[in-house]
Image (tube, rainbow over all chains, first blue to last red; front, side, top):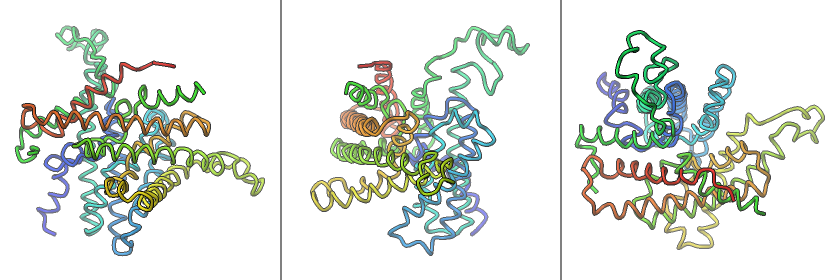
Length: 218
Length: 204
């Protein structure tokens, strides 16, 4: 495997082959947990961990799994890793795990993981599969963080606990006190999960305008 | 009885799996190109949800909750096996999907042919596992969780058929090229979701 191809495994899923906007995998959780930047970051890390290591495991086992029962084997590997994530979240970040509630468990059925196992890990070497998993996890995380950033900033006027916009900003950081930002009203729609659908639709629009190859012909 | 109807309406409309919780989005977006396939997938989801919700409920109550296994030995009286939940639920779902597939193949080959690949795909539909997890979070009884399963499935059916119908029509409109297909599907879903949010808080 040459240097260029290894790099491609990591960078392709970030844009041209993004799991969410191009492959349409893992949309469910992307919409539901992107309400704040913090949730999005934690979810991105969790999914990257699970994709990378399930890809690695399945790739190591790929010659020993009978193809008829491979779905069940894959599910067990994924479920094991997700249980690890879920338990460690409860132990170290209890408040956050309450907030993410069922969506941590739902990483199991996140189609990115299953999709990458089927499409890549089942027929490729362990190291490549691991990198593919990391790349796709980060590609997923990237979209999640962009959506989370927009939603939290415009929905609450704050980011990770620092206030930038609106009424509260007057009492906050000095250089923002007299800016036009103070007249900004929080956009209630952005707080609702529904806004992430529109943001994703617009992201897809932007991405496809830049890269005509991705446009649907049908 | 009115309790059960209330749960059904709530699961199907007010807390619609797809349009309010955004579960099962992947197959929802991928399989909604024509009405025919959408109806097939929707029906299969109703079926699987109606079976897995009560089965997982029974397994959880008899095997997993704290003290459920105390009849084996008193030492297990304060043992909880809920940490095994996820693995068991997904196993049940995979097995049920397989079972449903075999039953349909045996008794109605025509329906089996028309569903095709969508049956096995249901295993990784987040709406199914979501149904089980929500049912646990809401602490429903057996009857209630069965109705909840059917209701959620019906909600999915409604949403996917509606999107497919709109997508069939929108083919004839002048949508900007980069927005065609997936982008437009997202925005339509968003608008439908906004409409469904209007039902919030309704009680029978």
